[in-house]
Length: 621
Image (cartoon, rainbow, N blue to C red; front, side):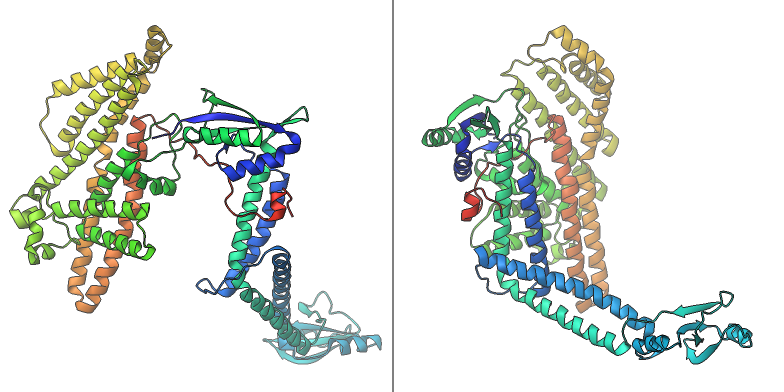
């Protein structure tokens, strides 16, 4: 269920602002209203965190991703000294790498000219013999060898060209030549410098790798900085009135209201607690009951939160998601793999987490569905070698109905498609019923519009059966049902408490075309559930194909193919669950409920990590 929220406002003397913020953070009760995304102080902290993250990543890279070592604590000035030295090492290494690349480029450029001292050439120039060096094509050089306007010295062959030096003159512009620019150091000196830079890079790498034992200290400091940044954003959010009072507003869940009152009285704050108004957009705090709490990991992975005024559909989401998961994976053998994974996770963690329980539920539903359809790793041979598995099969939906029972495959497939449509009509019809139940206490006439949608869902389900599997249908009932449902939607769909019937009717008639399109969309939503059959059959076909390839490849390669095929099919199945299984809940079902999942999670201002003394004083270093 979505827990009731209350709006709170706290007033404290401006001089007591830090004391108030620290007490609020320690209590971890109040979700701050419209907290500033950033401020000048938090930006400074973010820059500091970026510096730490850069060093941390460099240390991890040098130590190796898989490397593990005993961690040591490091705080205060010792941590700052280490960080400064590591930043210096990174800067030196970066500069050395850049310089080495430049030097390597210079070595490559001059290597073919041989090892010579550029200073000797400069000394000759100072004595009146200025030399300039070029590479010239041999044919060009032969053409100008008798030209008396300039003199040159042949130095030899160089990469297919002639190396020459002119004396006290430049090569004429009419001669196509490439001038060689003298380096600032000899080849030997450049190589010696490259070796020195290798030493700097190696030393810096060793220093960074040796700091791997402080990675936990870095991670801790990053969490502290994140907390400090949040603190500064809350400080920036608070309002100062007349320079004397600091005001801060937020939200508190119903179960923590008394804790908040106790805190406020203890801290001698003035405060106000008020119910949520229509203009408020409070956070959503889901309160799970029993097994339904295993939905939380799915919500966290998807990043979806129902709005405060929307439905909590966690129970229905869990029920239908489990069924969809089983039908999409569709194989009892794959369900056993998930069950083994869940057991291993449980043993290794020594506790049964919500994710573990969710995996148990999903694996159990998959095993059940796979068993009743006779699907064990997509193999008929397994069913034939282990006849007891056939006792779980429902022949009318068996994937091997022809081979085992002489039932036409089309008949079994039609039954599975009918099951998909039944699930679709049931889920969409449930949404209509939930809307009606929700509106009855409010005496909201629009509930008759939801009854209209329920009628449409039922008759359009009959139409889907007719179109897809050729089931017999009374078109008089279908047409009358669609018309009756449509009229109820148009007449009552826009009614609401406090609004006159005429005004609601006017709005409904104004949205006549939209209601027509929504009716068409309702039909397409029911048809959409056939994806469960299609994806399940695709998974079976892939499994059978790999089984056939494995059977032709011999025992060794066959086993490899079977394992790889199973792994690939499992990955594709999980992706299909996200794409299709989740979609049916978040779009089709939620759309019928008029849910938009626009909520945001209740996250109170609280202490997440032990703070240093300077943080407690609100000082950012």
